[in-house]
Length: 294
Image (tube, rainbow, N blue to C red):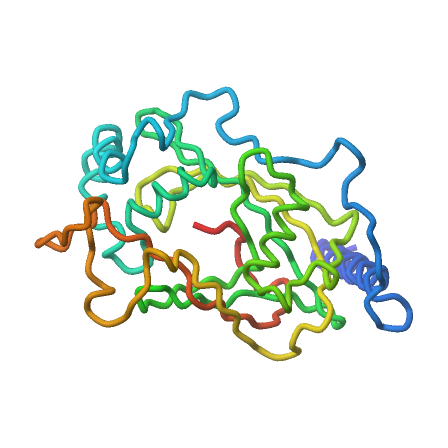
C-alpha cells in the first residue's frame, strides 16, 4: 500500500479517536438528556492530586528578603546578562510587558518562585481549565483589557497561577470563580471532568518580563459550567484595583516604590498592572494557543 495512503488513513483514525474521546467526555458531563450531569466526584484519587511545589529543593529568593520592588529590580540587574538587565527599566512601558512591581507582587503572593542563579529563573505552576460547551467547543479568553488601558491578546483557555501547596482542583475552581465571577463561576455550576488531567513542563522566556527565563508547569483539566452564554461575553475582575485605580494621564504614570513619579518614565518599581476585563469566545480546540499565562 502506498505510504501516502497509509499516512492519510492513520490521520483519519487518530481524528476519529479524538472525536470519540471528546464525545465520551461530553456524554459523561451532560448525560443522555443534554443537561449538565451533577457530580461531586473528585478528578484525582485520594492523595494523588498534584500540588504547586514551588522552589522545591532549590535556592530561591523571597519577597521578605528583598523587601521591595525596587530591591528586586536591583537584584535582577546584578544577575541577568547585561543586554537583558538593560531592558528591566522598560518592563511595563513596552507593549505587552508588566513592571517589576507585578513580578514582586507575584513573589509576595506566592504565585511564583525565583531561583537565585546566573541568570535567575522564575517558576510558575498554572492551572488551566478547558471549559467545554455542549457542542464540544472550548471557552477561550480572546484578550484582556488591562487597568492601564492597554489590550493584551491571549487566545488561551481560562488559566490561573497556583499558590504554594495548592491542589490542581482548588486552583481550577478558584480561577473559574475569580475570572468568570461569583454568578457565572459559582461552585455549584461547575463540574471538573475525571480522566482529563494532563501535565506539561515548558521552559521559555517570559513575554511579560522579557529576558527572564521562566519554567511553566501546566496542569490542565477539562470542565463544564452550567448556564454560560452561548455567544461571546465579558467578565470584570479588576485585578489589582487597589493599586491601579483611576483613569486618564495620572493612571498611566509610572510610580517608584516610594510613590514618586520617575521623570524619565522608567518603571523600576512601577505600579502593578492588573486585568480589568476578560473577553471570552467559544472556539474549536485546535484553534487555541498555549495555556501558560505570562
